[in-house]
Length: 184
Image 1 (cartoon, rainbow, N blue to C red):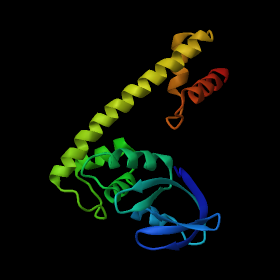
Image 2: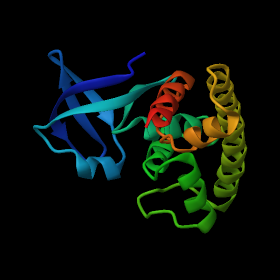
Image 3: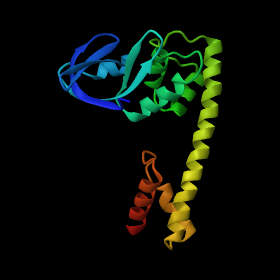
């Protein structure tokens, strides 16, 4: 699949940009929030999701990986199409989106979500957040065990892990960062 495209923005309207890379112009749908950020003529890396349906092939774009991951989760909820998922993903992480939805503070540019659909999204996101927390806890246990096997006391390993940025995702990167913290 197409993970990301680095190219020059040569066209922009209220729904999409044309990103030119390798002498090919890619039509990429962006959220209205991201469309405000990008400028014609600038070179930009856009993370992408290729959506294939019976009638269309569309490329959806995001300015960072967190939005892309949020989009994938939201797009997987039945009754949520890619355009709605795109708009919702621009609100932030899944946790942030859930909090916004629970407060009922949807921005006016997000259309097509009634009360029943809103409740369904909140319910599914709650389940997803629990899955992610469980997965992260298991990864953190792996990191702590690896550090203990390297001769680091368990309490110091936990303290070092707590100082790691949440943006660091893989177990290997967490171990490296924890070792750096311990070396300081």
